Image (cartoon, rainbow, N blue to C red; front, side, top):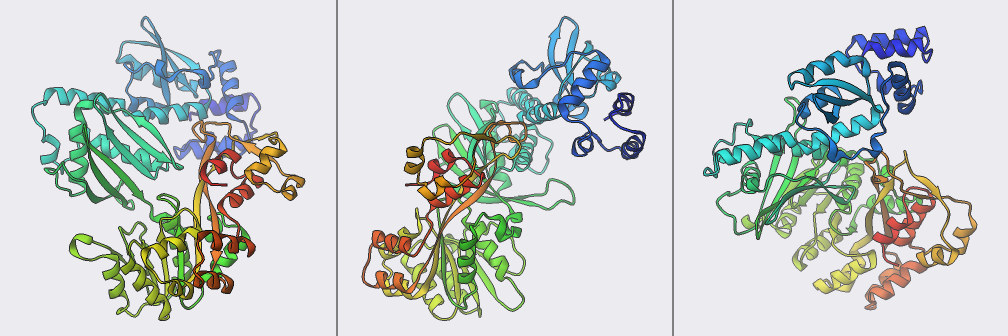
Length: 559
């Protein structure tokens, strides 16, 4: 931001002399004061754009209605657009129109366009809309893609150019992958998908549980992309017929904290599909209050984990936040006086003070083998990544019965189904009844964007009752919200996720039902009698609190 805008704001009496001096000091430190102006409620983005357009007699454009496919890409590079915060939106003859939020820097804009032989005219746009557009352009990485395509044409015969020279990071393939990973981190993605088809290739990010396409690299480089990632993950690049798993650790700045990526390759018809899971260590620092438990559910969980022995099971599909929930519990228990050991495949969150073991089936270090070893390591608390077979289940149960606290996960749809799954594995009912303290099922629902969510009229009463609302709920005064979409949430209407939980403690009555050979339905009925809130009900409570939408709850939970 230039001092020119500061003068405009003073002349227009938007700010007083005292404010101007403060912003002037910030400018001297080469800092952008625009976000400060918005935070201080001095002016909003819309009013600032209107003021600048009026003062300098430039046209004003709302980028919401501008088709991004019309952006002129051959005048200035994307790096220049990013550095100067300007986007060429139209070209006529030798004149190019730049979308800018700061028209006082016209000389800088003329300089960057001069080399292309164009004269510059300006169009004023909102600061937030321009920032979103520039960010989107950066994610497309078209300049790198063009370079990749060109280089591929030049060296079509060489299939291993970047593989043999893997230490040099200056090739377009290496730069593209590096940038894609960085973009995924900035977007808050959990997974990155590199997919290759007969006529196209694409990269998708999973953000807030939803996949979205971000870029289509040239089809000619699909072999190089997969091979480069395999080299980074120290996988066998000559083996393309079987799936492989590996891990990459990358520090994006010289002194920055490295980020771990779990890499999985899968042979498909037209090349190897690569999926990278971003392992976020920050998740372990989450406070239990941030996870989204209802107060009574939190109380039940804390009571169960603070017991001296027993077993706590967390269930849910892949990507439902089971690991984060377990690590949040371990973080609470992680004190100087306890010995905590975990066996995972692989360890996703790095937590100091906890002895973490990566299982390795090829080398014989299975969950069962790790558990046996733990019991000789004087443990207090044991966490098993997943109970997959009878042997692991047996050892875990024996550990919980001999004075240890055991945490683990299973892949089932709800809490009562977990008991059925363990019975199907071959675990004796009396072992389940005597060892399991609490079972928790969970899902992650997308949060409504706080910047743009809008109140809506409640659907008809019969529709709400069908969804699961009670007469008592309908009598209460609460507002239902719907997603709208804005720049803050990239037009999705949702930003971030909240957990919904089904917490089922194993009471004396529940133990009796299990011992008498009760099935999943019997256990569920007993749980409801004891006041268990299921996933659907927990989701409806989130709707009544204005955290998520009814459609999101209905789409992720059963009746």
